[in-house]
Length: 137
Image: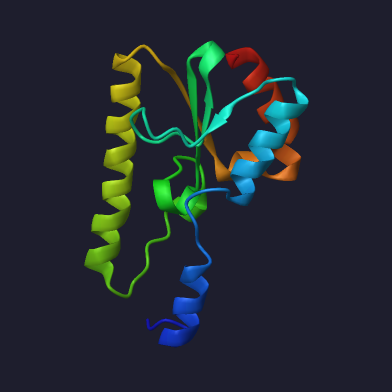
């Protein structure tokens, strides 16, 4: 099956994909802030460059996109592009392997880690996410 977008349209779509300040990440930040927590963003001095860092609690939070990081419960993680299949397999499997190594490195340094999936930031899931954050912190 070929791509339903031509090369220029696909390029325009992919150029809008960013790794920082995603909608999901902003929702988590607003939720944490409303709960009274203060945090730092994208600290480059600790492994994995976590999306949100709460230094007071020595907590690193990663907000992962379901497709890009392989959510274990979401159908978006099961979809792999058919075009350029080898590239995408290597890319997505590499992301998942890198994530595991980053979590291990942080835990070895004494950091607590939390992974929040994009599907957990949907409006209907926010109360559940809020409870999870309260229990963790």
